[in-house]
Amino acid sequence: MTLKHYAVAGIFALSAAVPAVASAADAAAGKAKAAVCAACHGQSGVAQIPTYPNLAGQNEQYLVSALKAYKDKQRNGGQAAIMQGQAAALSDTDIANLAAYFASLPAGGK
Image 1 (cartoon, rainbow, N blue to C red):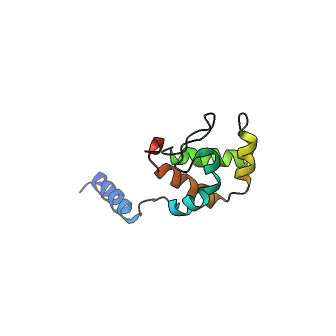
Image 2: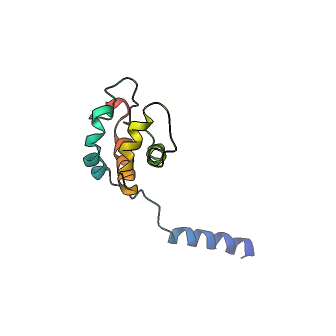
Image 3: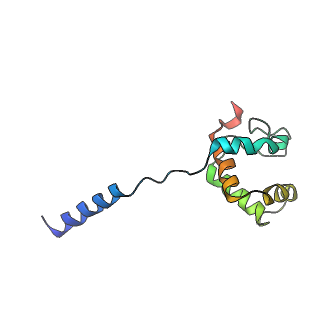
């Protein structure tokens, strides 16, 4: 075997030893926490108010980023003042769980 073969074999061996990274977020816990969100974003993640965004089927990482930006008051404009107040009470775990829940819903609430 050449050095190249040993290197490739080593990479495969190491990659097999590293567990797959899975989302630690709990969508069921997110569903329980989402009750307050339903007033504006709907029970199924579809907004009841036309100017508010639908959350159902949204990208999980986008939701995490958006909620953290509201919490840190880095996201402004529109309904930011409302969302900043809502996000202020959320822990990082709450944010991850909410994002997992809304991302798990079918887009459009169907």
